[in-house]
Length: 241
Image: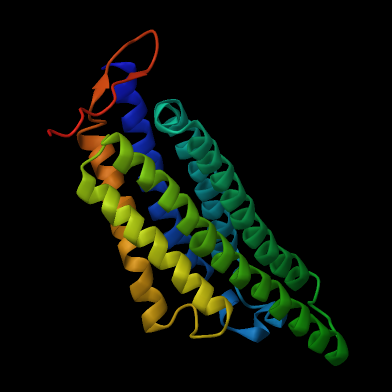
């Protein structure tokens, strides 16, 4: 297997990991995201929250890893855009980790409230809701706004380079733009993030990430000259007159 094929395979696997960990983390958090009294309920098992936070750590690692893996290839088609993509993914990962830490803070406070007074319990609920609100905002700014910009950057480079079929690149351009616009609408109160419209707007970017990941894993890059010593990318052929 050539080095460029390995690069595509690793990038595809990392992209697939981002999807699995993101969905699994949200499912793992469970009632901590919806029950205001979670922080004062001493009977709740925190294992699911810890698992969710760990999955988001893996998600952040995969987000950064995928961009770093792709950078040596995509920089040939736009060094500035490629660098911007890596920087954007770093910001996205940092936002994701901030959200995970906010929920771990809820777990820490819960463990210290076994004998809380009524006044302390009321204050704890307020603090807990604040931490959950931080996670909700990071979910909007990370996997929506930042993801939208990053998706458009990568999809544009894929479209320009023809490293993947253009239908996949176009799906990324549409999906990234749509999820960014939807995130903006949620930011200004047009509709809730997890409403029917919000979820529907996220489907194209999900389809882009899955199709891109599976293409990388199964087929790899197109228009690439394999070279074990260095990664050399062949520019697309000019359109016929």
